[in-house]
Amino acid sequence: MAKSLLQVQDKRKLTPVLNKVDEYTGISFRSNFSFAVAAHVLKGLKRPETKTVTTRFLSTCIDIGAKQNVGPHLLGFLSCLLPVLGKENSHLRVLLSPADESQPEPHQYLISDTLVKTDEDAVLLYTFLIVTLQVTDFDHEKIFIYETLKEGIEQSPEVFPLSYELLLPKMSQVISLGSNKSMIDAVLSITRTMFSTLSLIHI
Image (cartoon, rainbow, N blue to C red; front, side):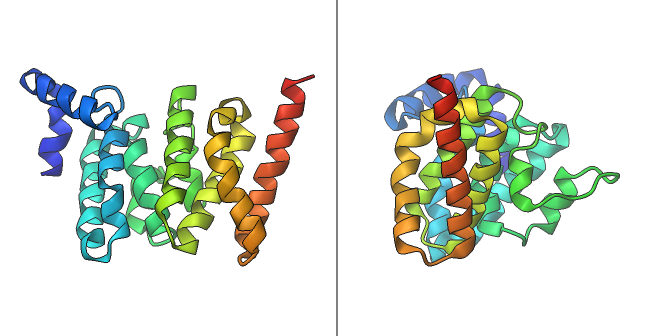
């Protein structure tokens, strides 16, 4: 199924079908295929009865896509799967890290130059992760996402203002509840960088 889905982009006869899906969902399969797929299967990762099969599906999509090369076309799949796997991602580590390079922390894969090549890639990544925060109840996923956003805003501060409206309420909730130090530290770091960037913009 995953192989057939990835080949959809190359089948002109399916373009009308994809256009209808795009119109119905508001997500573009033609311009951002991996993020469109990720958005549709995200709920499957949050339900115990479908989590295993959804994880396998995303892993298969990544395996197939990586046979061509490792690049932005995998970003949507990875942004959906890596927060769930966390450090339990030995297969993806081998896939994403060249043999002669040290392996970074899991969240650092998502903001690497290999996967994020343009501002559009960055905006899609950060927006998708922030949307994921709205639907996850697991601290390890939230910490992964906030750690990614913390490094992401330091790396690409110019693209983050587009995401502030979605992100601020979630960060306020983390601070007010104050239950997880790692999460709070990441949120405070994001906040400092955010206000520093805004100050520079308005100078």
